[in-house]
Length: 111
Length: 117
Image 1 (cartoon, each protein chain N blue to C red):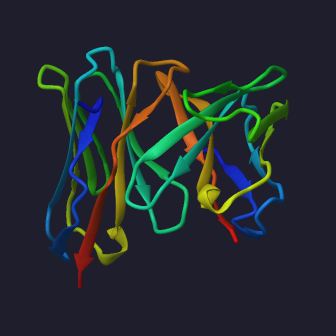
Image 2 (image 1 turned 180 degrees about the vertical axis):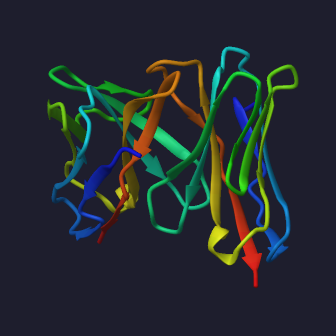
């Protein structure tokens, strides 16, 4: 079993839809949870990070962490074609410890 | 956010030659940088952790004599792919950690697409 599981998609939604992206993990030591956006042939770009359980909102993006279920989510409201990219979840136990990535979910927002 | 610059963005080389990729943290000092390899439709695979002023720490299965890492300063790490072969063709990405909020977050370079012909 992989430490981090993420549905690779692809996920296609119409413009304006609410998108839900998810990851599950098995390592209970993970404390920091991150979401990255990666456009084709580019390096990942940090979108959001959260510590421990809870929600965090930034504009159209909301990150949720449920440590009891070992489940994290990223919600995108009013999705735009420019949101079309691969979204990677990532997590680690804190500090400078190794970051473990999901495989990424490819999202396509159709105008 | 923090900026990490990676160069070149794309390189084509002949089999048997060596290629050097640079990773620079532009607005912060990074004592630790990371090198990843990414295959199509797969996640980032950590190759090695680069520590300023000391030897890199390689992940299991990564040949340290083939993938030479040098971290000579707090803002620069280099990855040299020696005696490259077609199977080394991949997307290589570096990242550097910066303090952010309660923890440390990784900021990535733009990636280098290596094609060995």
